[in-house]
Length: 246
Ligand SMILES: NC(=O)c1ccc[n+]([C@@H]2O[C@H](COP(=O)([O-])OP(=O)(O)OC[C@H]3O[C@@H](n4cnc5c(N)ncnc54)[C@H](OP(=O)(O)O)[C@@H]3O)[C@@H](O)[C@H]2O)c1
Image (tube, rainbow, N blue to C red; front, side, top):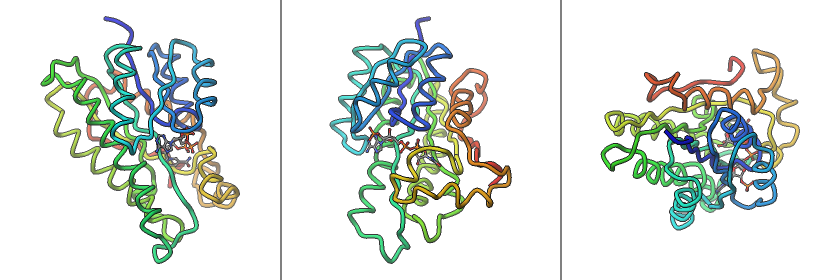
């Protein structure tokens, strides 16, 4: 069997970059998905222990997603692992302050993106389409359980939709050689909080974390690696909470 091929969306930084690095260390050829920051994606690729490429797509754009998967086919070969990691949040919004444009931005990146990427992955991996099987991991959030009142209920709801995609798709493709699972991180040390307009968020909220500290991107990556691997061969439709006890 050739080298397994993984695509990680949103892998130019944060949890996605840590996951790409760990997958490469573990023997995958990795496609590092990015949206805007090509230089950051190339830097991740250059630092991989194994082979990898940078591939661009706005995951909310169907044309971009179709092109990105074709790019992976051409340059790395048949895909066996997809990590739907790309995601955005916008802070400071009680529901009565959220407008339609913001809702569409959040839902496009966090829901439409994983749906489109999962569709392309299933078309390639499913034994019903002549594929060799594979695994998908969705990077959801503890927010889907907790609701994120006063911060970003839209983001939490988008992750609720991702959880439902995980359950439904896992059942749809279980007999076709594909496992579908999710991780639900809590507060993880990445730039997403500052980009969402609240750079001090983790420091402020640390006292509410039972384990007493925020998580590291590498701690999420470990769970993603396990869920993708044959060690999790009897695990599908499952959720791993990586939230320090929250
Ligand atoms: N950090 C946390 O505390 C936390 C907690 C729970 C869940 N999560 C989830 O974990 C995932 C990764 O978050 P992170 O903290 O690592 O965030 P991050 O550092 O902000 O990275 C997000 C990545 O997503 C990419 N991205 C955003 N919108 C995109 C789009 N429309 N198309 C393609 N790529 C897009 C960005 O690409 P560019 O840089 O190229 O624009 C970036 O690489 C997200 O789904 C997030 O919701 C994070």
